[in-house]
Amino acid sequence: MAVTVAEMLKMSQAQLDDLFTQSPTGEIPSGEAKGTAIIAPGTTYTQDMANFVNHFAWQGKIFDPAKGILRNKILPFGLNAIIAKVYKGQSWMDGKECIVLDYSETSLVAHWVRDEIREVAPRIYLGKVYLGKKRLIDFALEFPAPVS
Image 1 (cartoon, rainbow, N blue to C red):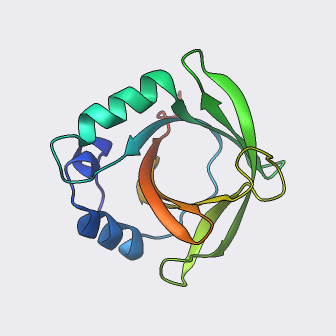
Image 2 (cartoon, one colour):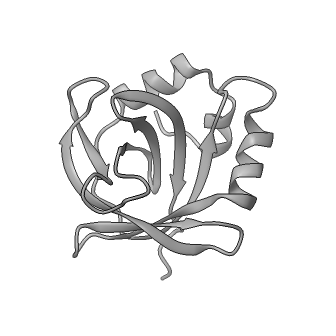
């Protein structure tokens, strides 16, 4: 079930959870992805919250699969910071394989954070954010089409 980021912003939490559990892991991505926070899914606030977070806090992630890491683009000026290890592992949500973004050994600021992503459409990933073992929010990552 391939979807767009705009469609994910209109989904309820249950729909996002179903999409995540029904999607394949996909390959560990490479390069820069535009990030969209999905907060209060299925409400009238979802798009406004996504815009606010994008402008002031988090713009996306830059993956380097050769090194097995990523950097988050944060703050209004897109600082590349907050590194995570990237690998395939077991999802805390459903026990199936996912791509794990693990901050436990790479970040003093976010060492208790774990993200999990799966590819829901070509170049589009849906992510789940955990603080400890508690699920917090969802997010989408969209990679640009390859240049021919």
